[in-house]
Length: 265
Image (cartoon, rainbow, N blue to C red):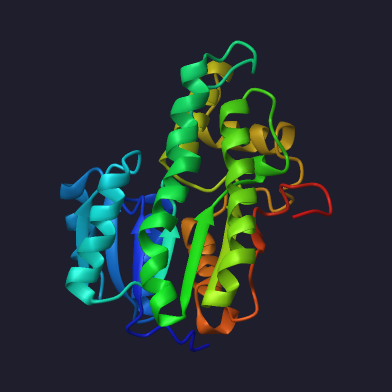
């Protein structure tokens, strides 16, 4: 399927490894030109050299509007336009009883997971409005609609992000900007590796046994009995930013193996 994004310019945040890098590879394969952003610029530049497309890398702290503005300017100065924004940057944040979390636990995760998306939209939408075409995609989570009790700071940030993007979709459609979210669950990544290593130590079992028991006890909806792959999420991202997704707006695309056990977005 030709996705129709050859030579489109895509900004990808959180592009060092995991979902961000997988999305970069997928969009590069579709002919998009890339602006990759993360805090570890040295590793990012190494990753970028393996991509078969024109690409620039830019270090940006997404908790600062001035850094996000500079990222958008770098894209415009180099490529002359911005067509696509794939905002994957985020953190899990502190875990524990919701009422034992400190104000700063909520605030830190809020700034990175939610306000960063607001900043990205502020910085990039003017360029997309000018040309009457754009795609804005944020990574949310199963936690936005199926919260887990000890992950409150993450749950609320992702739920708010899903609502924000839906809100944007209403106002930006008239400018040709389609705003959507993609929601993964239990994807193979450094984050879930760490979770499973901790579980393995606590339960005195192997890594694979930790994954198996986690799926059985904590994610019964994932009947595929495995972690998802970053490439599986990247495929959904590529579709939703494409010309083929011209009637997808304000939607949430779940890539969760069935983790969310209800009929809902």
